[in-house]
Every structure is written in C-alpha cells, then in structure tokens.
Image (cartoon, rainbow, N blue to C red; front, side, top):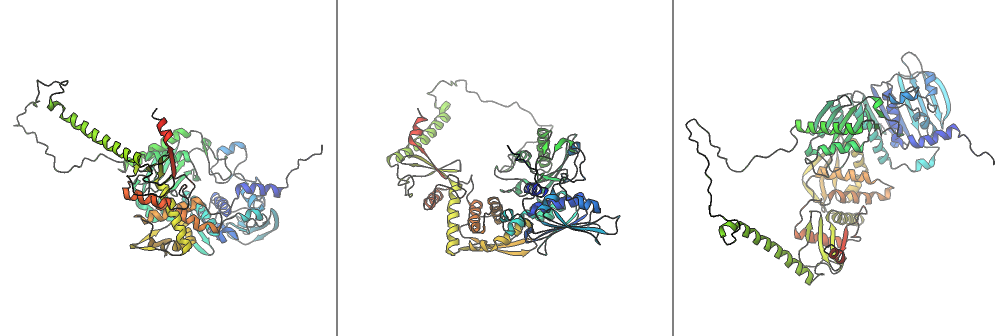
Length: 603
C-alpha cells in the first residue's frame, strides 16, 4: 500500500490555525491590541475601515522590535513569552503561543513598521499569504505599526460568512472595550472610516468603566475588595435597583485578562438572592488577582476560558465579598418597623408602682364542650368561611361541566362569553376545553401577538405612533449606538421616533401604539440585547429579527396579575394569530391536559 500521509505546507497549516484564532476582524483587533499591551505601550490607536474588512491598523508606542525579531515574529510558534512547558503555568502576558501573527499573515496582506529606542532606523516588512514581499529599513517612531488589509482575500469562503459591517463593527467594539476595561492606565483610541468611535484617556478603573459604558453607571456602582491567601478580588458591582433584564454589563478579569465564567456568574447572582427578581441580572466588573500557577489559560484558542485549581473555594469567597459589599452599602432588605399611628411606650419612673400582670381565667372552660358557644365562635367562623369557599369552587366547576365549550368553541376555537378564566401563579391562564384543561403561557402568548402585529405594520407601512409626554434622552454605550445607527430606519418603520442626539446619545419622541411600557430606557436596551442575541443571518431577516426583539422586550412579564378582561383580550388576540401555538422563538404557548390524565391523578 502506497504512503498517503504528507506534511502540510506551512501556508496551509497557518490557514488552518487561523480558523481557530482569527474568526472575524474583531479577532485581529484583539490579537494586535493585546500584543501592543504586552509591549508596554501607554497609547494604543486602532484605525479600521469597512468594519475591518478593508483595513485594520494598530499603532502603539511600545518598545518595538529589532530587525531580527520583526522577521521572526511571523513564524508559527515564534514567541518571546515562553521557553519551556513550565512557563505555561507562570504566564503574565496576553499572548504566548506565537500563533496570532502567523495566522493573520496567512489570510491577509500585512505591513509592519517597528523600531526600538536603541535604533535610529526601524524596519518595514510586507507579507501576503505567509510570503514575505519586502524587507527594508525605514524611518519611523518607536513602537509598532501593524496594517492588515483585505482580510480573508485568499480564503473567499471565509470572507463570505462575515456579517454586515455594522455587526462586525459591534464585535470589534466589544473586544476593544474588554481590553480597555482591563487596562485603565493605557490610553485607547478607536477610529472607524476616519471617524472617532472611542477616546479613552488613561484613568482609574471606575472612570474607565464610565467612559466605556456611559456616565449613567456612576450612580449605580459600589466598590468591593477582599484579599486572601488564595486570591485577591476587587472591582465594582451594581446596586440592586439598577439590575437589568438583559446581559451586557457583566465582566470578569483574571490578572487583567477578560474571561467568561458561568460558574462564577452564579456566585454573584446568588449573592443578590432575595434582593432582585429572579429574572434580573446585576452589573459587575470584577478583577481577580491570583498566582499564575493556580490557573490554566491554555485551554481555549481565544484564551477567554480559564481553569482554576481551587474553583469551589473561589466561588465561596466571591459570593461572600459581593454580599459583604451589598451589606456595607445598606443595599440588602431590612425589617420595616414603620407602622401607621403612634405607639405609646410608657416611661418607667422612680415613683411608678409596678403591678404583676393580671390574667383572666375561666374555671368552667372545657375544650371538649361543643355546646359552649363562647369556646367555639372562632372555630365556627373559620368553618363557615371554608364552606363558602368550597361551595363557590363547586359552583364554578358545575357551571363548566354543564357547558364545557362555553369559553372555546373547540380546542383551538375563538373565545366566547362564558365563565371566568383562571390565572395560575401569575404566569399561566387556565381554561376548560372539550378535551380537558388548556394552559396558556401569558408571556409567550403576548410575544406572539406583538410579533405578528409588528410584521403587519411593517408590511402595510401604516404606522400608529404615540408621542411621549416628555422626550427621553438615553446615553448608549458605543456598541449599542452603532446598533442604533444600523436600525434607525427600521425603528421608524414600526412606530419608534428615535433620533441621534450626539455623544452616543439618542432622544426618544415616540413609541409604537401597541407598546405599553413605562421604562423607555429599559425597553430600548432590552430590544438591543435581544436583537444581538438572536443574530442576523442576512439583511432580509432584519425586520423579522427586530419584530421578535420588540415582542420579547415589550411582552407582559411573568408575575403580572391580569384582570378577567385582560385575560379575555389576550386569549382572543392569540387565537386570531396565524400561529397561536408557538412563540416567535419557537417555544410552546398552549398545552392541553386531557381529562383522562386528570382523572388518573385522582385514582
């Protein structure tokens, strides 16, 4: 049998590696900016064009590279960060594998200009598809200047899967912000198509958070800090009243490296238990300092997942410090001793005569004497109330049995006037039907109604808008402001009157008539978050995506008590929908428990 195994050429191996490390333009920005941080830079500037598809330029004032290092850095696994396997457990830098630059060079046209302080001239190297095109000395400032052009130009299948520019720009901003939050002592600047998106001067951690995510956060942040032999934790958490229904302000950093950690997230959420509602998410910006030999960061290509040696112990410490911070700032619920009226508390004076309390006894009391009315007045009253409640329940049941189809003509029919509907757990609407008991999820039902209504409005172009009593100004973070610019016309088509107000702010003048929402800021933020979580496959799906996002953000929440008329309107509108059985996200709205199954439970 002939030999069939061959060694891959370096260019092909680099492209395969690029598939793990470089997934989109944001990946290039992340790798190059992290290299600039490792180089000891105090100012880092990023220029991008067409969301990084045409150009990504990262300029820093770090220590730069010698001519030899400038050539060698493009080789795969060429790194100054580690020399042996033991070094993997003592890593303090962002990069260490030596894969990023070789991966970038394999799928783009790259130019590097760099100079060290010791050299009068720097070096310029041009590379395309892993091949060095030129190498010459040039005059340049100390530091490094990387220009990455035509990303994925030689891998058209990868380039085809990139999303719209506005979407890719949001990915870039998100990764850029994570690095900026971890290094508040460094000045960061981000430009897109020659317009400045972010200007983050060197500052303290709190000010950096405000510069990145908006000054409105200032009133909600409270500090936390603890030092132990295992780990040091510091940062900020949000006040309970500012908790949101969506993600976006939750950040963990380990030794100034951003990470995702669902297990630690649960520790923070549990610390807020009984303080915020179960569907709310607190904000947090938490920095861990730990010995590098206690963690393993070499388990994921993007290094956003880290394995901790003492994960359970850290979980307990984290929950304790968050609870401590909540307690110190008097944010936990306390006993309310306020009552109506005035409580008369007698003052004990020296000449006050003290008497033993008198207890009135009935020597003829007999607990087994059922004939004595004074012994059983309370018991009889309670029994009477119970009989009345049970009688009302049986009467309701008998009415339903006499006309089982009085509410619904059939299992999926239109609602008619009939006996009362029942709300269960402030979450479900119950109704008898011909085959048994129907259960309707009230939130999912309302989502379906709002979703189909929004699509009809978009299709017809007949927008019904309600003006706000007072226009409300919202300060958005840079990522959400980019998203607003992307969706501005689409918002208008469904009845929102939102206009740009400058400095990443918008002003809301009107809402769709179908939206009954008191907290406009929370509504808009929820729409943005839901929209981002759904994602966009292509531009044809934008309206559908926006309709789903608005429906989810505007639907009546679980826990809301509904009046009888509200339940009737909700069920009427649900069964008028084209698909009343499933929510816009594909979850079941209606479930029917057969009469036979109910009867089996009573055997």
